[in-house]
Image (cartoon, rainbow, N blue to C red; front, side):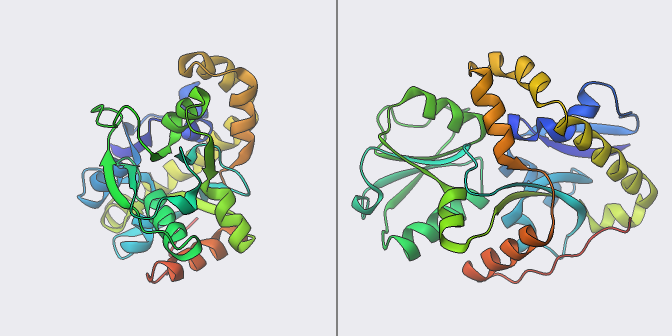
Length: 268
């Protein structure tokens, strides 16, 4: 049995939708669902064989993993679900309190880089969890991701909203890669055929999901209390492939955060 991590957010539903609908056979696979930061930990510590993980986790620990080709969660210009929401303009946040979700590593590192190097701002960082309800009632500024970001944006409490993918694009002209699919090197050695078969099925599942955004939104938008149109616009902002531009962006991001980037892939 192959243990595979699955993010509990709308932004990965298209990749798994073939499995969800039963169009792609999921026998031999056990899916484990959690937030990105927890999936990073589970894969790193060997509780999972493969998973979607933060791009920062792969960059920082590439000696542990191999990438699954042509799979990512990326966005060019806007991502909509990785937002820095503030009650004041960003340049007024120096030494002010900023709350960062514990659910993401990549978005945190990207935000810190942008605040420091682009805006010249060094706030006081605090961490929160939506699950544990540790976000203050009236935060001055907050980094939110996934479904939490969509809900906070809809509340219209924050007059200044910065889309981190858009901030990166304005700076570099490149898409930003938030997450990748990877397998532990140990698991690939022991279960190579199973991993390669799962990879083929995952690509088939993603290809199916990309053709059914309208169906996905009819099912998931009511659960998130979002309008269908917002749901479809959001999914259309996302890119689930990993091609030349995305790899170029990953390399540049790794340089900005002083980490080497040495991508290695499974055989296909």
